[in-house]
Image 1: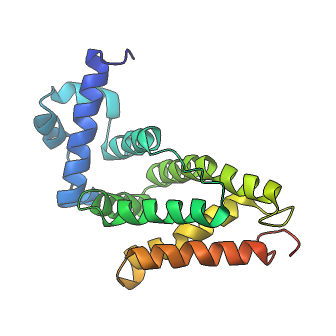
Image 2 (image 1 turned 180 degrees about the vertical axis):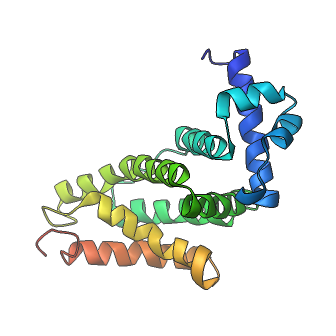
Length: 196
């Protein structure tokens, strides 16, 4: 696929239309014909390339992973994890991204291909941020043997809980608290390291 070529433009239009439809109607009402109409491309193109609603969600998640913001590197574990938590919070409370994530998570709950695509998306995001924990271990901010990926997962878990389960406000203070809790747990050796 050439960047900027027709294929890239069609993909961008179809994925934008898919995101819009997911936000408006959810996964269970995702219709390839409607996506083609919204994207102003031929139905045959959408059916041939993506095949079914799951194919659209899988590609949308791949595109979201490709375009996610890179991690912050402040030189401080707490500040790096606070930046991560605030990014997750902004994403989940965004008027478009929040409903989109809820729809994608709902799709993953009932479709194994969508579930694997969602797991792949999170593996990419966790791997992007894990080096800040590795660097913190090297600086002595967390014990040797700390599982960097588990620390990153611990930051976002309470934020997703609020999004999907409790419905409690997802504000910046909540994000900062999630980061501080993950740092405290890492320093205590909860994620595989020996406490210092």
